[in-house]
Length: 393
Ligand code: F0G
Image (cartoon, rainbow, N blue to C red; front, side):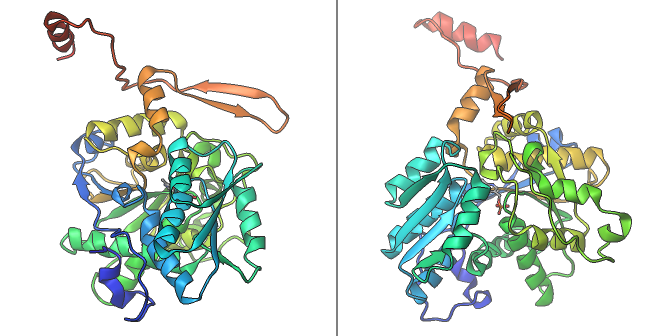
């Protein structure tokens, strides 16, 4: 059964809605003791949205958005994407028998994500530019009556994605965690989570809200930068939100899912964070990579963008925003197999962030494999294998 549609009473669809489902949701909430220890916490739970049918949290929103596309008789559903939204739209559109088209920044999508979109039969348009350029094109295309926009500016995406808050509360026996921590890219996920919790509060199902904390990658962190610039009055939500967000022109990060310089839903996400007294911070490439390896040692695989959460928790604990004994849930947004090349390069010690600045100058910043675990060449004998095991016990 779908873990989204079981909350149908809290979704804007009636009984007759032609649900397009791949049985999304119902994802595990894991205890992660090694990640907790790494972050200086007594305990830490990880909600693994990468266990959805196409391997990312996008499916919980896409089931609702594509259902709505059928209701309005859309001809073609389109999205701009760093890869996961595309894979999800492609799959759900295929289930619905609907054409899908996806705009991707050429050369900046992991091969696994691109392969998914091709497999599900989407029209894949590789655009010369970055995600923000693709997103601008989507907003222009949205004017065409034949086009149904499936990005998270689509309110039905947010409706579906908010159910993760309901699922989390059920899994936590309705004990509200002190902190929720999510990665921040285009800011749909943080917006949706906050909406879910706000609705539960409004219904009297929970007595208070968790603090919503959003973590961005250092080279793609326009909202963390804005947050850091807010004065005390603005941080308590007493003064109006800033009018605009200064975009990052040439965002950089190996966490390609969140390589976004001009997030469209920044205002809603910022409001939610301020309202719950959470924080928006950024973490470095090294911090993301190491946190990812630690999550791996808990037996839980995620993609780099998801690991910003544990890296961020470690920082927020050190800064005194999160206390050791508080209850913390991080949302892992994508599956480890979304980017196996990153994993392999980290563990072999060859991972680096190679960037080209607007002026054409190139830079390479190596990432240290702090917790590296490279394969070794072992002779095909029992003795050699036992010797290798002994050395690493
Ligand atoms: N984590 C992963 C794995 C993602 O794919 C994304 C966004 C995020 C985090 C950030 O979520 O945008 O709601 O703040 N991926 C989009 C995509 C942009 O096109 O797949 P957000």
